[in-house]
Image (cartoon, rainbow, N blue to C red; front, side, top):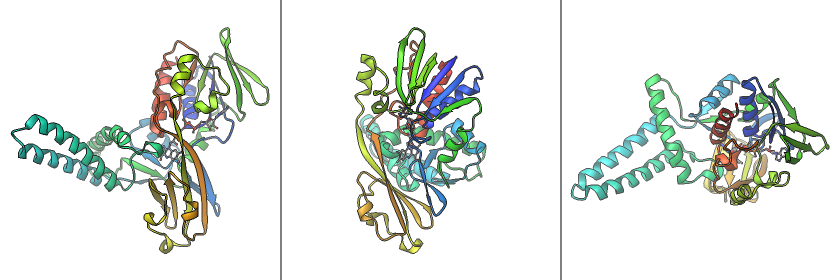
Length: 356
Ligand SMILES: Cc1cc2nc3c(=O)[nH]c(=O)nc-3n(C[C@H](O)[C@H](O)[C@H](O)COP(=O)(O)OP(=O)(O)OC[C@H]3O[C@@H](n4cnc5c(N)ncnc54)[C@H](O)[C@@H]3O)c2cc1C
């Protein structure tokens, strides 16, 4: 089967990787801009720094395998001790609240559960010293979704190797996730086309015609769209249901700012950089990556390097109800899966299992 993928971000590239493992499809992937999409890096004096995606939850097996296969350097952003502390806090609170309100056990149990969840989230956030969600997903909703996975991995890792210093959240060092992208582009079973797709025509009796910016037309049995609604709505005619679903997505601006100070002593406290509301991550002894909802470029104290990157994020994902297998066009990517590499990869895995 000939399969075309539009979009060379992590979703498209991982999908091509999974399909190539089946060894029975011919896979072609198109990218209009830079391979990697949302995963970007830049250089300061020849050294590579990530400017967006930094963290990996230690839950996704495939991603874990890729990280060790490509020999990527990681650092713990959270430790077992933090998580144990956080679980203990939660249970002690629950216990105390139940003990002290025997008369109203049912009602108080509910209150306890809510309180425990809130406290656990709070402690997890505080102790990990990073926000557990990523970018736009920095909400309690995002954290609640991730928490069972954190706890599951904690128990699994503790049972497997109680003395090891493992972590649930890893910070990818050096170029970050860009290294994975570079490695993924070396797959000899995949055809990489660095051209924008300008038209996808799915009404051509059995084949889907894909036209690129250079006016080349390629024919495929299946097409996987791995870019955003505002991008693919320009090159494919959507059904009413598809349009209704995708047009619900709301976008907002988001900034990441890479700053290098003269030395570690001149690094200001996070609070001193106005607008950096979400997160700041120290990448080495003098380099910080800030994440903010507003531009902070004007407010950055004197430094030797500063560069701002503007992103478009979305409020909530829409789910994958369109990928039911009765059509030859499938949709993957962050807007459907949810922000964060792992959700994107999980959706790819699901779709790859569906495509025989
Ligand atoms: C600032 C920031 C920080 C983040 N931090 C983290 C983090 O720490 N951990 C984490 O897990 N996640 C993080 N994320 C989220 C994660 O990076 C994204 O969810 C993920 O990379 C999205 O990948 P994607 O392939 O679905 O989409 P994209 O990366 O957007 O890829 C879509 C690709 O399609 C291409 N394209 C568009 N139109 C066409 C066309 N017509 N023809 C061909 N190609 C086309 C685009 O150029 C793009 O490369 C972060 C995101 C941002 C922006």
